[in-house]
Length: 391
Image (cartoon, rainbow, N blue to C red):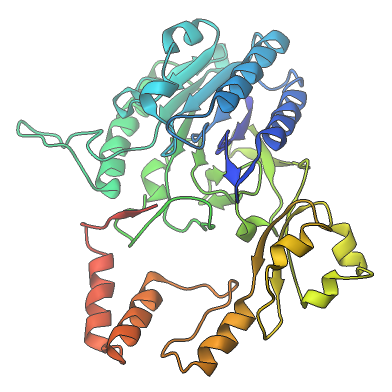
């Protein structure tokens, strides 16, 4: 069994007030080109098809066009989609029965995750299980007095228990391999600035719960990465924040073998890259360095190193850099805060900070000191079951 894994398309995404529809159409054409290879038997899209629960007309039109072209080229290809935390389950599931007749399978309700779709014949049978994003209350605790589960971790545990029973049943019915498609934040995964994450560890999923599957196709985190021996994030096909600018983007080609899956990265060349450049304001005037010239037409973030504020730099620099989206003047802000005697220090954008650091700065700013006991209590609360999701 060979299939292609991608996720987090975020169709309709607006990046610093700039529509990425043209870029996303370019990427979907790249995906269509890859899937002309008839050795692929399935396409997996692991959630966040759209960027908003009410997608724009352009986003809907783009995805509809993609599915139409795909099925025209590869009527035999199975397509598996799940809803992510950005998608509306009810909207994404519209027409699912009709789409299923065409070999396009949507799963947006967690209660349907233990109902596999089997692809292939004889010794090549593979059972695909589709686990959409687990919204609070989407599953109930077992027992007569079952109540809706709220914690992401508890929801994942409940889903994993059902899925393991269904996985074993699929083997008994002749499936050679089992694949789980899920939209989760797995413990140990590396997040970036563009995805919604959780505060504290109680909301993270344990990858070990799904160790029985031959492959776990994950969505939610936008950076390609492996989690354990059998679980992979394909990452988003485009950079949706400047923190992702230094990472390459991939589709994943998965071949299920006798012992472990063979995962091959298919490099994605975007229409425009996202790049971050650091330098003084004068570096972007007159003759440009070769490094700046090479990134002139990228989606750009320029971090100015000047110690004094530059007035309206975005207006002046955008005349030379047509896709300049953000200007940072952190050094000037830092110098200003130090000069004004501010009680906290300004962190540069490349310095990784935690929510605990922010809380300590908050205490320092309002009280003039950060109490160790209060910080320790705050840290304890973050790991409690009653954590909140942060958008």
